[in-house]
Amino acid sequence: MKTPIQELLEWVRATLPMDLDTPQMIERKIESMLEKEKEVMIDFAEQYFISLGYKSAEDYFDRAFNTKEK
Image (tube, rainbow, N blue to C red; front, top):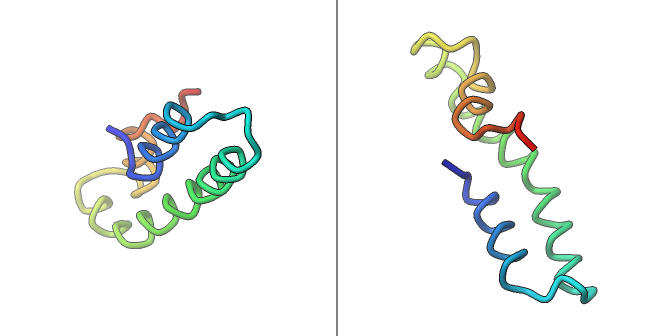
């Protein structure tokens, strides 16, 4: 499963000509939004995921979205 920002980044890389400046700027902006997206999701869901038995919402996020894989 991918987050909406991860899907957008994938789409931009597959669709736009990445040898031009504007698509590269778009790619960098989207990449900068990945951490903020994660923080917002964690802040919103922290207590819910703890109640489900995860160490934290970040633990859930890392498992669900495979953020440790590169």
